[in-house]
Amino acid sequence: METMVSLNQTIFPTRSTILSSKFINGPMCSGLVLCMPRSFKACPRNVTTRASSSSVAVEQNPQTKVAIIRIGTRGSPLALAQAYETREKLMAKHAELAEDGAIQIVVIKTTGDKILTQPLADIGGKGLFTKEIDEALLNSEIDIAVHSMKDVPTYLPEKTILPCNMDREDVRDAFISLSAASLADLPAGSTIGTASLRRKSQILHKYPSLKVLDNFRGNVQTRLKKLNEGVVQATLLALAGLKRLNMTDNVATILSIDEMLPAVAQGAIGIACRSNDDTMATYLASLNHEETRLAVACERAFLLTLDGSCRTPIAGYASRDKDGNCVFKGLVASPDGTRVLETSRKGLYSYEDMIAMGKDAGQELLSRGGSNFFDS
Image 1 (cartoon, rainbow, N blue to C red):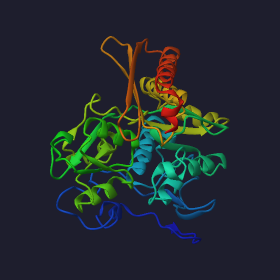
Image 2: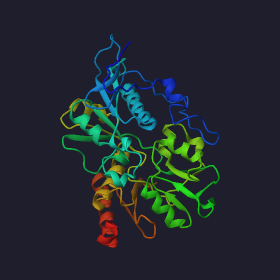
Image 3: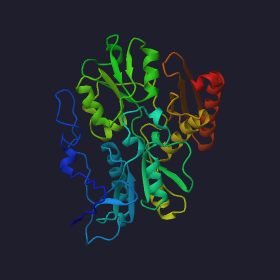
Image 4: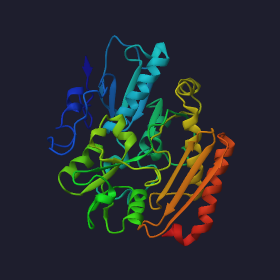
């Protein structure tokens, strides 16, 4: 039985609607796979869609107890995939959470989702995809918040903690095009769509004859639809997101780390809770993947040292080598790609050492770049 509370009413889509091409920006085009694959496990039960401080549509089962955990998430297909992955892993590890209705997913629209016509840098940069979710967490409207870690500012809101990074997906970027197999194959003057200054600067540095449309925003399905329509000749997307959506059939080429250094924390999911909620912290600790947590901490220490924003192209990646050591690579660039500064570090794969590596690498690039470089 569904009880609908109509305020500024928004109804969460059913599974069949999620899977249809109509829901994800129009009919199927011939070039790329736009629909959510059938293997996507976005079961809509126990879902709340939240547009303000009040719930607007709640699916309820009168025979089910009140949810033990309310998961806050954005409403994009990728964000929902990450929320459902979190739910499934919690259910697998804790018998009480496997009961029907024990976990509820609450969809929250963020500033970054509401304003799609302007570049991210022009509408505030940090926290655009997390602010409203953080507010819901602090207001006890949700119990945990699932984020793409690359969207999380380096400073967490007071009274919140982020004790969990789940096992990281592939960090690389994917090249997608209907006319070329790689960036090198694109004719001079071709336009690449991206909302990322990190990608833009690295593309232009290596391929100055190409053009970049840098307000190419929207979810994965929206960007692929624009590519199908010929708005751009190619785009780059995080391979992690395509894998989580089972949409890797669209990939022409996977870019190596040397070709395109990823964003800090790309491919990592972070889960936050209130700092005084020991129950949620314990649940989240059971999902934490320590190798990922340390790598993300190293990369975020680098970003924090540079005080990175959406206006400064910054990339960083920490990984474990075959000997068990941490290898870190970092990069800053001018938005037009004319100047790129790179650095690397190697040391023990431990929290203190990796934080020190990230900070030291950031300080080096600050020194090399000078204040004018980061103000540009």
